[in-house]
Image 1: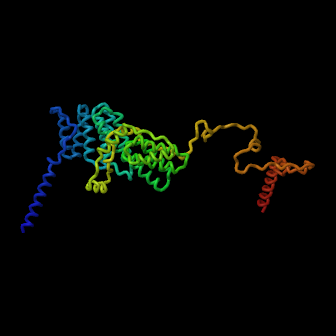
Image 2 (image 1 turned 180 degrees about the vertical axis):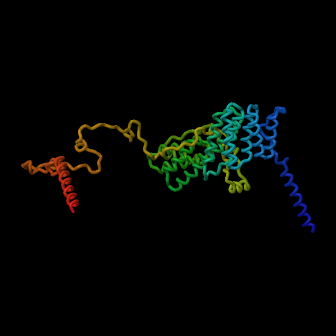
Length: 416
């Protein structure tokens, strides 16, 4: 009996806690860009009412109020704030539709008010829209690529903004996902023995994203891929091993890379002290995931960016497609294929028969007469009249005879 009473009490307590959590005081989330000016102007009153609705997650009502304010008071000093608030309401509402609407509103705000301080915040929100929709490295990277573009745009257009340091770290995390996406494809090619394809992926990855957490492993596989492609790529293989020694001095592949360089009789570079300090900082500040975090990562579609770099300047060029090293390149000034087409008028109609041409079945050469043969015995072409071809005079005579025959047939049928 006592057990049943305790269960009832616990259920009642749980219901009370849930009801408190559902009240507006717990669901209220403070708005980031309010208007602090204390005034009772009607446009300010409407704006404050809309902000209160946004903080209580009544987004549709807030947007209706803001649109009413913008249409009624089209010369208000709060128009820019109202437009930004509409975008923020879509951003808070979330979902694929809400995020798409928020991005469009933020882009419009930047277009109309590029010199306002809030434009940097709007661009940062656009970056976060795609950052939140990123998927794991083995899935579609479209949102990761868009997030990379938008964060680089923020650092380019608003380099002195207070959002720049945060956007720089976001860019490192985004490029970690993009680099892992390329590494997954490269590892698959390397495992299958498609070494030119693997080398192409690994080379583009290491050139574009040097801050990638597994760049040393990728460089090791890059050198191995070039080594399997023959002695023509020995220099590229050695360059990959040399980068491990120089740019990733704390990597577990350093000793093996040095032994490879010794076998190839290539110089072993010295470790870069700046790269040594950066790699040491990264290893000391790298966090390991617990059991719960690992379980959640398996169930989540979002990527795990714990291994992303926390220092260094991220790439501002992005990943660009490259030509595989196995594809031959025409040297400058060489005889390569060109697309130039020239046209020349030929006056002599027999030039095509006399000169060599590209026809599949060129005409056979004319037979030469044997020694001592008479002109009548040669097999040369005769004129059209001698070969029995119809002349214009013969054609006119034939037409006249046909007309006479037709007239005689008509007369016979008329007499009958």
